[in-house]
Image 1 (cartoon, rainbow, N blue to C red):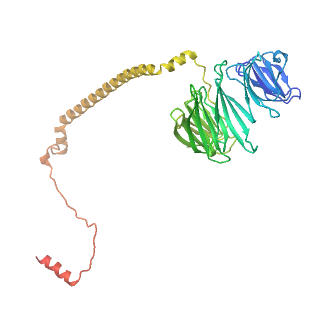
Image 2 (image 1 turned 180 degrees about the vertical axis):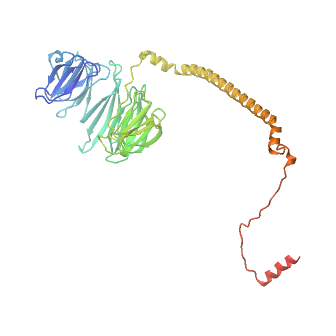
Image 3 (image 1 turned 90 degrees about the vertical axis):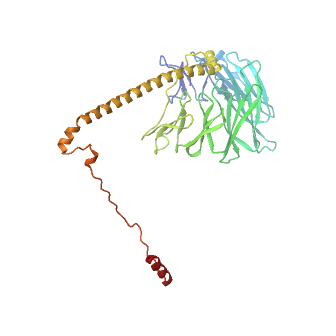
Length: 432
């Protein structure tokens, strides 16, 4: 769906008008399309495209006309994905009749092929871009020699420099199947859920693209992992499992920060800052325990609401930064200097606060001493009046008589039978 200029709308009007592109500003229907594959939008909304047999039809906005009035014909076309930061199509071409398959990158609108790589014995392929378009992951499933089992590997393309695209190959163990792959947003890490066959216990492996090679960071064993939810700011993620189990993981330090559960959970959503996580149970999915729980990125509960007929939860979108990418990079590079400066300022402010608190405590203590002094003075002034009313000087200790009373209480009593010899000895002791 487009984010700015127009939007895609589904309608049942006629067979000739299955999809309609609308201009949101004017409310005008720009063009309708017949039933077929869904459309995919480019990152800047200038183009939208969809597959039709072995062709990719790319349309321009706002005219909604076919780009250069012709389709992009690609024999063996299997799937494609737009780059999130450039008008580039990543296309997978499935090989036919013992021919190799291909991964190709095509520039739009020039239609120039800027990269191609051949892949052999491919059964299926899944394309997934990193959120900034710096990397492209290609999950390649191949049949083994017997044709009965599938071996999976990942081809990780670094496309930051289109003139020199590099590839890292990550083979997965032959006995394991891949269940999920997720990129870290705005980062160079990714995580994979994989397991032995249909085993309920999974592994979660973390990798990072270094300057020269792909690095394995960690593998978590014996997890009932089902989903991976990366923070929009990267570095942290939540591993979602069966029956609402959630694990808060720090991918930088490689440690689990907390484990919790939210039974019957319908969805998990990070807030745009990456500081909080919301899990909720929607009435669309369950009639019991509807409501939501907000936790910090470390898993601490900060807010919890149970509410009947609760259906959905949405975070308020975060406005774009007022700083340029260059300025943000400069701040990150000099973060220690900024932190030291602000720490000095905080220490000075803390000193002022401590000084004010000390002065307040001294003032209250002085007020207390003055009040006690005035009470003692009043007490002394009323001494003769107290003696006159009571008939004796209540402050004179000699006017009082101290009486002490002792009370003995038997706490326990025990009876014991004595033989003759013991009785004689006891009588002898008493006579002495």
